[in-house]
Image (cartoon, rainbow, N blue to C red):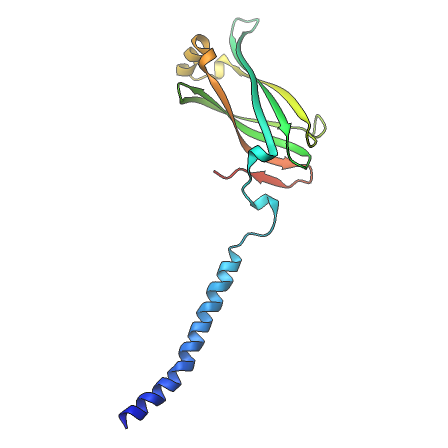
Length: 169
C-alpha cells in the first residue's frame, strides 16, 4: 500500500514540478531578452578610432602681448565614419614622464562650420592659458614643454541625424 501511495504522489507532483520549472524558464528567458539593448547605434559602445581620428599635429608655448604664456595644441580631426559629424567631444590628456599632469574637455560643434563629412578633415588650434594651468604643471609647461605629450581621448560623437555615440570606458 505504501508503494502505491508513493507512485500516486509522484504522479501528482510531476506535473506541478514541470509547471513550476516552465514558469522559471519563461521568467528567466524573458529577463534575458529584456536585457538585450535595442538594435541602435547609440546604445552600443563604439571603436572611436574607426569613426574619428584626432591627431596632435603640433604643440608649443606662445607668449601673449600681455606677457602671459599660453600652451597651444594643433589638432587634425578626420571623419572616418560613413556619416556626417555634427559635434565631437574629447579629453585632451597632458602627459609628462608617463604621468597625467592635466586634462581638459574639448568640444567642437561643426554646425557653425557646416558638417564634417565622411573622409573630410578639419584643423583646430586649442589654447590653454597660463592662468588655467595647475601650479605644478605650469612649471612643466614653461620649462619642459617639449616633453609634454597631448593624447586626445574621444568622449562623444553626435551625427547629423542626431544619433549620439558615447565612448564607454
